[in-house]
Length: 264
Image 1 (tube, one colour):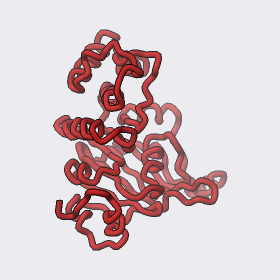
Image 2 (image 1 turned 90 degrees about the horizontal axis):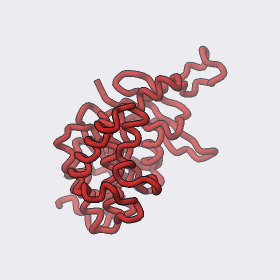
Image 3 (image 1 turned 60 degrees about the horizontal axis):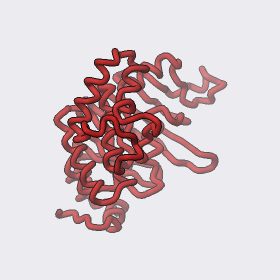
């Protein structure tokens, strides 16, 4: 059974058609990178998957449990065939399956690092504070940030803040992690640190969906790559198959990626 299944996903913003019938599935422990030019719908796809936005048409499920399904116009006349979402209770339960790491960190500035990592464990999962803090310290140690447990976000570098954000997502013990351009707000040196850390997470056997503009990283970490353009998935397959594709849109995209070579 797939951890995540999205089928025929469509999303418009006014007259702008952002996603045009996109499918995305992720199996247990699988790492999928989503690449493509700006404006192709990559981040919108993640926002729909994580219930930050609602799709217009299509279906979404986690571990076989529907978060949204395609309405049938005859049965749901008020929906006009649009996606019908599950109850708030079901959606809340499904949110415990995944974690999301934002490109801009989204740490709470008035909480120290350990509080940022443990808050959701204590107040959402209702775990004992001592247990949550022990887990938090273990993760901060893994991130190389244990000595920063009592520091505040403003006292950290961008790379350190992103590592805290990753620790916060892992603290909830998700089965699937989403990364939305995890290095876009970082300079090249800090980007390298964060990418190396994400690579090290492979041993945890957590499924990942990574929207990234780092082609070398995508090639190294991914079991499968989706190439999106103009709101559609044009290619899906193993990294070498996708990067060596003769698809003209893919070749044009790679030709504009600085420092990337198909033979590298």
